[in-house]
Image 1: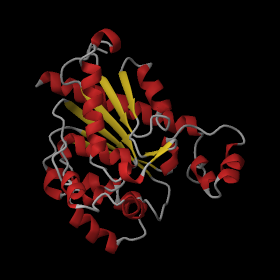
Image 2 (image 1 turned 135 degrees about the vertical axis):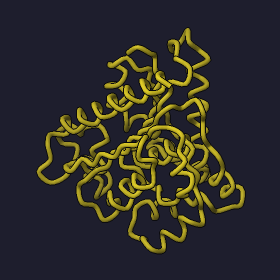
Image 3 (image 1 turned 180 degrees about the vertical axis):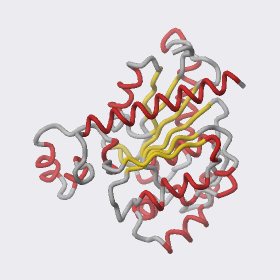
Image 4 (image 1 turned 60 degrees about the vertical axis):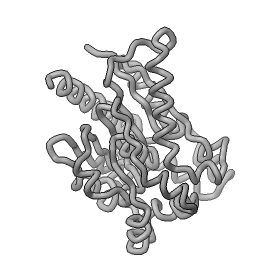
Length: 271
């Protein structure tokens, strides 16, 4: 790479360790972030409700890495990208400049109550107090971020059209194309893509990927172990019907991301 780019993954870092490793091998400085309250080993309703703290976690990670070059390497100024899956995709959009409207999302969930975005949002209740609601609706952009990537994101329908249309950085939206009632591409990722500036955004739908194709590949016997622990959790090992091998899907995702980030960095240098 001609420039040293820092890349952050927004979500439980165990969930995206495959991607972090793949990108680090391509020369990126990768920081994988855990968000308190919603990880496997730390669940706290009080922490989870502070949804607006997720972009702030990324602010802190950016600051930590960029101010300690002797520990992490030298990051070229304003060459910082963020990638996030699921709720982490929401985080990437917020740090890029999207603004969330709790009232808009509450209304939309009355129209689409089947969406997992709505059930999860209602469960963590991030708009439960005036303080939480104000934080959620705030400006959470970090101007050091030059590009973002969302992987089958959720809760995007609460982002305002105005802020999405005016997003100042390039966006790659990757969606899982396998049919899903709870997280259909057409109501989440594809809907977001139609509202983004067309000149600086790209939408890719991977037809044989499920929402869980963006997680680490399951080991042999994992489904049985997951089902024994929590019935129904074996679904996280599944891709779409007649899907390619999961490692092939992940290779495609990695290639899409690196091509997009390289092009975005080159365009920024030319400007």
